[in-house]
Length: 420
Image (tube, rainbow, N blue to C red; front, side, top):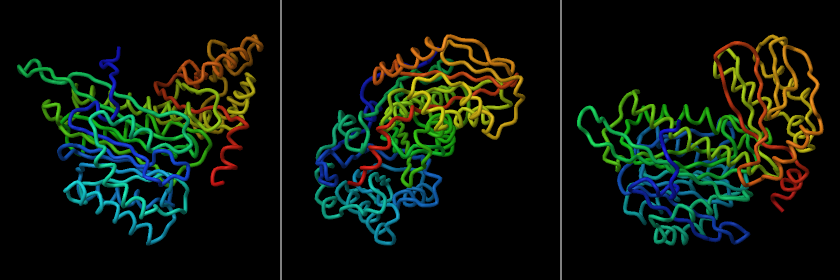
C-alpha cells in the first residue's frame, strides 16, 4: 500500500517554496511564457539532463553549476525559444539571464538554475526577458505553482502537476513524525523519447537529504519514469529534470539508504511517474495512454528495455490508434528489443485479453478487444484512457514498465505546422 497521500499545491506544496508564471511576451501566441520557482533557503539540488549531443545552452549551464555546487535557490524557465544550437551568443544569453535574476532576487548567480523550451535554433528574446524578470519575481506566491505550470508548456494541451505527502521521523528515538512533501510540475507533449524526452520537470521537496543521496534518488526515479516514456522516438535538446530539497520540513537529515530514505525515494518516484504518464497521455495528437508491463526478464533493466521498445513502436502505436488488436506487432517489437528470450516463453495480453502464450497464438474475441481500445480513447484526459499491454518473456525476476501513446493523424499535422 502506498505510504503517502496526494495533496494540492504542486511545487509550492512543500514548505519554503514560492512560484510564479507570467506572460512576458516571449511566445508569439501571447500565452504565459516565463516561470520561476524559488526556495526561501538554499536547497540541495540534483539534475538529470538530455543525452543529446546537441544541447541547449541552459543544459550545459545547469550541469556545470551542479558539478561545482550541489545547491540552488531558484529555477527560471522561459518558453518560446529553446536557445539550443544558438552558438556563443546563446551561451551569453544564458549567463545574462542568471545574472539578471540574481540581481533582482539579491542572491548569487551560482544559486540559479535555468531551463528553456521552444523552437530549436532561436535565441531567447533578451529584451523581453529583461523586462519580464522583475515582473515574474514580483508575482512570486506560495500558491503560484499552477501559474508556473502554465508558463512552461508549449504544445501541451493540459498542465501537469502533482504533490504528495508522507511522514518521516524516527519514532523509536523519540523524534516526532513530521510531514514531508514533494511536488512537481512538468511540460511535454512531443519530441518525447528515452533517454529523457522533450520535457522539462521541476520537483520540490522539503526533506533534509544529502546531495549525493538526492542525486542518486533522482537518477533512479528518472530511469523508472521519464526515461521510460516515448511519444515519437525523438530526444530533445533541452530535456531537464531538476529537483530541490530544502530541509524546511525539519525532519532528521537523511544521509544514507534505510527505511526513511526508501520511503522518500518511493514518493519521489511516484511524483516523477505521475508527471511522466501525464506527458505520455498528452502526446501530440494522442487519444490514449499506453502502459506496457513486462515481467519474466533477467533484471529490471532488460524488462524496461523490452517495454520501451514496444511502447515506442510506430506499428504498435498505429494499431492502437486504429483500434486493431494486432498482437503480432507487439511480438515483433519485443523480439527486436535487444534482450534475448525464448519465443516459447512469450506471453502477450491486451487488457484482459490473452492473445499469445507459450509461443502459440490463441483464439480471442477481436471485436471485444477492439472495443477495449475504443473505450480507452473515449476516456482520454479522465485518466481512464489507459491501454494496458502485458508481456511475459520467461521466469526471471525482472519487471519493468514503459508508457507511451497512440500515433494519430494529428501528430503529423501538429508537427508539420509547428514553426508556422
